[in-house]
Amino acid sequence: MARNDMRDRDRGESEYFDKLVHINRVAKVVKGGRRFGFSALVVVGDQKGRVGYGHGKAREVPEAIRKATESAKRTLVRVPLREGRTLHHDCQGRHGAGKVVLRAAPPGTGIIAGGPMRAVFECLGVQDVVTKSIGSSNPYNMIHATFQALQTQASPRMIASKRGKKVSDIVGRRRNEAAGEPAEA
Image (cartoon, rainbow, N blue to C red; front, side):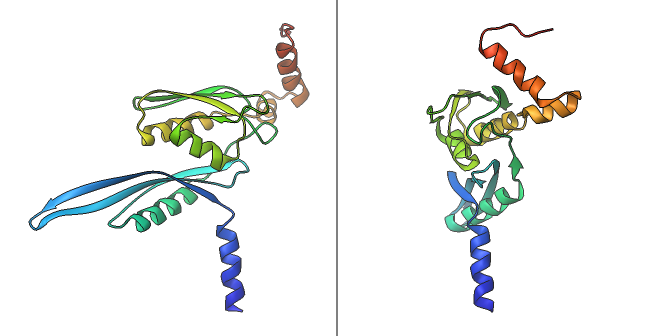
């Protein structure tokens, strides 16, 4: 019976897809020389609209990665996706000197993103997105800015419920504007 429980627990943990973004080696100078430690930045997601990031520090690399992964699983956020493949609308995020611009893309575009942002979108399950990082290329700032931008995402259903309208009213406007017709006032 215990063996079956272990298999179920392994299956439960394997539902998440994790990506190591950055490892940093730090040194503490002590009387006998230097003591090295490692910090890891990890992004975790289920590739169905949930994603999180975590930071872990330890004396050994595997331990730092394990801590970061556990931290990331505790900070999962849900992001609404259009057709399960791209963002609903363009957005911007900023953290420190790092600024990111995220744009929805048509089918077949792929993930056009650099480094840390690519890891976030792969774990999130986005297939088509265009991004640009402006300013700092520090992975921590880029991840924070990306998450800030993703938290501003709103689906038509969310907007409709806030405004007390139907989803068809909201989506109908988007289709009219894309066709070149002006939106009704």
